[in-house]
Amino acid sequence: MRVGDRVITREQFHREMDQLPQFLKPLLLEEGKKREFLNNLIDRELLLLEASKRGLDKDEEILNKVERFKKGLIIEALLQDLFRGKDEVKEEEIEEYYREHKKDFFVGERIRVRHIVVRTLEEAREIKRRLEEGEDFVTLAKKYSISPAARKGGDLGYIERGKVGKEFEKAAFALKNPGDISDIVKTSFGYHIIRLEDRKEPHQKTLDEAREEIRKILREKKRERILKDYLAKLREKYRVVINESLLEKELKK
Image (cartoon, rainbow, N blue to C red; front, side):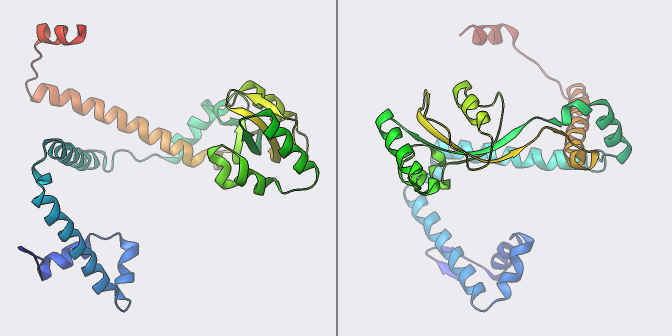
């Protein structure tokens, strides 16, 4: 297969297919999918040809980004090899961590809320009136709210105390039952109307609930120690020289 002066060989075609994520490979067995995959390769080569024609393959900024990306991949491969078989977390380590840090797995009261936020008090009053007359909160949020959550019907998910503004928090946590709607609340973002969707009472996570979170924490701690020791050895293996006077000048800039 030829695209301009570039050739797509059979070997390259199969190599590209091999690099697909494992879960996508069975899709190539479907009728027409290999041709579709080949057309995608051709499209990519066409774009690369045009980019090359415009000199983008010699653009210094792009080449620097490519070099940084390449270095990142190489380092990632080295670290994967370094950590392999050394960062496994045993069940007894998880249990010990849970016992010693049990308070860290206490979950405070959380509520799930939706809100509508508008710029003016007049707009908020009009929306509040329409809600009291029975109009749908989600529909009004999608149509009038200036919040990024508007596309989700104003859904903010679960929030905790101390994670949102004081005025908003006070009004939201004062709501008692799912479906309750707040009075108009003024914040620096505008005028809000809040609806309670759900409430989760404070609770202590069990070991089972916290297990995977703890495993992740302990694995990261092990990797940090392994990397720290490895870098210390590399500093002994390779000579590191720092021009202190030049560094001082740079630090003062």
